[in-house]
Length: 333
Image (cartoon, rainbow, N blue to C red; front, top):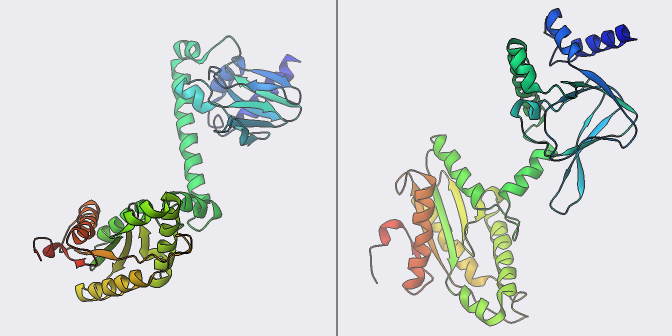
């Protein structure tokens, strides 16, 4: 019986990536310091907070790892089948478990090190083997990351959803400040021929909020953002910057082209119908607009965004309904 278990351990270890390159005497040491554990359906393998002092290889059955979400619901985050190894990262970092695991079928696991041994003890008594195992764990984790990167392509549903969560404004659905900043950096890093950044901001939006309330203000922002995106006709060029400020990015545009579009946007804002947000009442929005040009007015994203965002505020102070370039900031009416 002992010889049979030893043979099963050796076979399982040699078929596992983490241990497959070890020499015979090294496998022998792991065999001596590991043991099989049997689990019935729904038996716990480990719980959150348990010491991460063992790794596991599935000989038969199935193990599910779960983690508690923000609503205290348990979510499956991993599933391990025969031949899979898990728990090695906690062993390597010597950190408590951050999730729990249970057997979802009748299961047998090879556990290393065996109960009562502890990896620190093994590290002390077998430093050469322990160092080799730790190195293999690092290589194995790096391999998983590479494989994950290969699997997750730019147009996969997962990436699309992640992009939506990171780059879309939750209130309006158009792109957000994070996307805008990264897109500007991308254009700069690619040594783009130049681009224009336009930021428009309503002059009298506070009056709308004061008269109809902040819920009406939020609805008006949604209307403004979506209609502006439709007006520009290019989703990738339109973004919500801050509050009620909207940005339009124009790769390759000249100063004259940017100025012409800004005038069109100003006319669009005057005609914009936000009565749906104002309980059916008419509310006329006027807007001031700032325009900066790369590389003439700034060499990095933060500088361009900050400079351009200040211009509509200045325009409002000067009476509103204005279009300003940075060189206009020092001029007075």
